[in-house]
Image 1 (cartoon, one colour):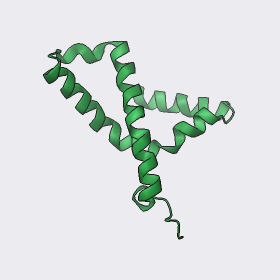
Image 2: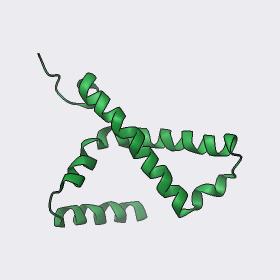
Image 3: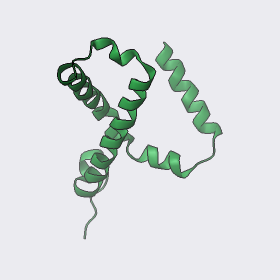
Image 4: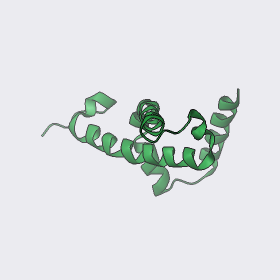
Length: 98
């Protein structure tokens, strides 16, 4: 239920705010970020637990969550750009004919 409330709140906020370059930049890669971010979070969590020997509760900290989110976006956007350029049909875009 909380996730539905959050989605509706963000939708309403998005309708109220003017279009900006930041919003456009973030919206471009969402079709790639949505399915990839759980995979990336799992990789980060596994690295933290097995390489750095952290307990599984380390994810409950606000700053760790922020770091995971920023790192995930930093990894997913280049992947999104690569897919858009080289295999656009894989993400629902038309292939450009040269």
